[in-house]
Amino acid sequence: MTGYKFLLDLAIILLCTKLLGIATNKVQMPQVVGSLAAGLLLGPAMLGIITETDFLQTVAELGVIVLMFGAGLETDIKELKKSGKASFVIALCGVVVPIIGGFAVSYFFNRPGVIDSDASCTLFLQNIFIGVILTATSVSITVETLKELGKLKSRTGNAILGAAIIDDILGIVALTVITSLADPSVQIHLVLLKIAGFFLFSIVLGYLFYRMYKYWMTHSDKMRHRHVIIGFAFCLLMAYVAESWFGVADITGAYIAGLIISNINRSTYLQEKFDVLSYLLLSPVFFANIGLAVELPKMTPTIALFTILLILAAILTKVLGCGLGARMCGYNPSQCRRIGIGMVSRGEVALIVASKGAAIGLLGSSFMGPIVIMVVTTTVLTPILLKLVYKNGPVSNVREEENITAYHEKLTDLRRSISKGKISQ
Image 1: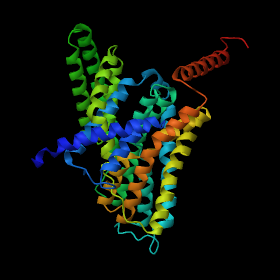
Image 2: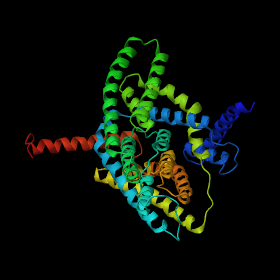
Image 3: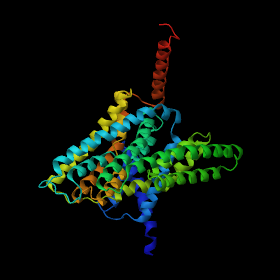
Image 4: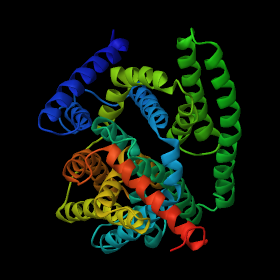
């Protein structure tokens, strides 16, 4: 009967995430905070009722794939195109500033007599790698929060999504550069070529699939359930290809699959079906599994101080870096705060990066504990802070943001017409 314990684990996770989600909602916090808290409560960090298993990890991975696929379905393509340049600038600042901040904090602690490291590479590379860990962004937490707040399709929501996808690519490049310095067998030009190949593959396959899928949906209106199955299969295919063939995160492939299908008129119907699949099983397991993976380390005063400063650096470097990038691209101060906070969560992405670095000697065992605590803290704080900045900001809804965007576009067009002499001053 022990082989059926996963059924009990699922039942406990679903009930606890829902109950704590309702509780957090009662105190004006996003329900995703309750799901994260449920994982911490049930896991080895507190009660130890449930431990992370391969089955739960697999379900959680499927959960984040479906979550990002749904985010792609809900994304406004036109708005995403408008924020493309801004998203790149935001992502670039959101990578450079955390690397500098992480290196600075690590530089003062990662030395003999302060915190001894058992990593095999030089101290300089170790310090840089801690900065690389801080570049990670777990957009899944932000996506769920923005969906709860009804802001996923807003101008800032699209900027966060676009920047997070680009941030993922830049993070891969930064990780590849640092690992290539520690491991000569890693060839950065091949990694860059594979990333470019993935986007070329996505454009070609996406166009072909879009044309066929749109034609099929138009001429087979009575077989909607088949449309959902085909769409889900395409999502899984893109996620698999991204991770296995090109070394890009599977959630990036899932998000792009959602973007491709979002152009189809009946994408709202698909979105409704995937929302049910997500909240019924996959999303609660994914968010709870983040908490289940946490094991709090033994802390010395020096490691505790390092942990606090690392958390501050993790939060401030994303808020300031991404906020600065957004400000450079014309966003107002309130929108800059929202974008910066939306990029704070590190989630499972930072843990994956840290584990890869530890495997090749870039990260000492003494630093893994503080990184885990930093990940948990930023993951829990992000939805809370997002709720505050959206509640207290001057822009109250998506329509107002769209009106502001349209106004700036008309003003830009008018200036261009004047500069070209089409309209007299």
